[in-house]
Length: 332
Image (cartoon, rainbow, N blue to C red; front, side):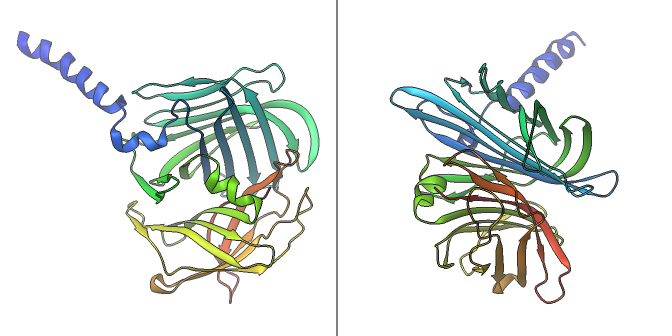
């Protein structure tokens, strides 16, 4: 009996360590010293009133001339009243928690930006920042908090999007979102997390073309992730496409067809964006039209402004909704 009493705490400690320890396959998801990285974190969830809530976030860590910089950008959109919130914060020398164990975090304490943070655990990810826009109107700065709880990941399941430069996406997760934008709401839905090493994928190519990242949850239970470029004439080049089933099994797709339906849509922000696309996967019986749930969902940040927000996909013939998601469009 005494031996059991001794073994049990040791076994519990061992299990705890094995869960929190970062495995080699998970390291692309984590920040690393002297390596520029960008994370896209977003969700589509349904509140108790049966209305959707979309959350989009972009977190960056960059190094230049021996200095460290961080950025935090986010938008939220509610189907209940079409309310749109956004915010952005850039900070010099943010604190980067570099450990071989979860949780990992990036925290910035800046008297100008007000401070922001992103923390990721095995069973939760938290985002905190400052609101500065609502429906394109300036509002008094207030706090923004988003907490997403999901089943403990041991480990996180990752799939490469691109090999050079490196880009990865995590298995879509069932998550409960607690969102605070003045008042607190709770909703349940899907969480997407992807990571990009360096600026080349999202921003280097955006000097010439519109670069779009799209996360879609389909009504079938499948999930579609797309990375593509659109030139000023509306021609599209698909760089990567991943389709995952409801169990999270990844399938790289090469035959996907994407076309712009409207070449230059003026979204009411600082620049025009192509916001409507037809998407066709012949081998998967997917033929859908993507469209924004609200046109002007731009994060205005001088020359670095970009569009990120709520979208839906519909049957091109009937207009019936086939899924929902979030889209990010970058253009320098």
